[in-house]
Image 1: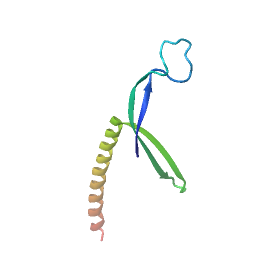
Image 2 (image 1 turned 180 degrees about the vertical axis):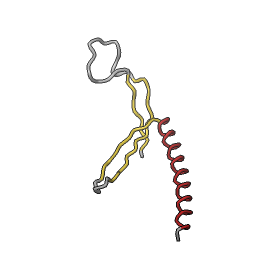
Image 3 (image 1 turned 180 degrees about the horizontal axis):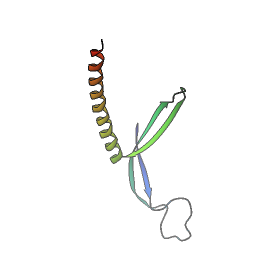
Image 4 (image 1 turned 120 degrees about the horizontal axis):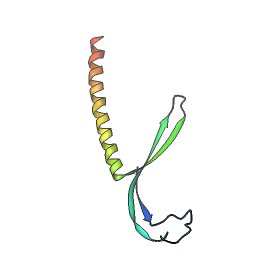
Amino acid sequence: MVCDVRPIFEDYVYPIPERNTVSHTKLLGFSYLVLMELLTEDFDGNTHRLSFQMTEGTLADFRVALQRATEQLDILKANTRALSTEHQ
């Protein structure tokens, strides 16, 4: 994961507008991002690289989702451990 700052300009570089009502050199501000790259492996053992860019709000949502997934995993592990000890 990497934190990044991106500039926000009033206009894009391309396509070139027909009229000059906005400026492509006027800096309006910055956008703060988190860049995340994950390596995954499919059923055939092939590795795939996935890249995501997240705003601060999306990162907060992702953190909450990870916490919720952790809580569910803990419950699942606790319940399956109890089941596996019953069959021994």
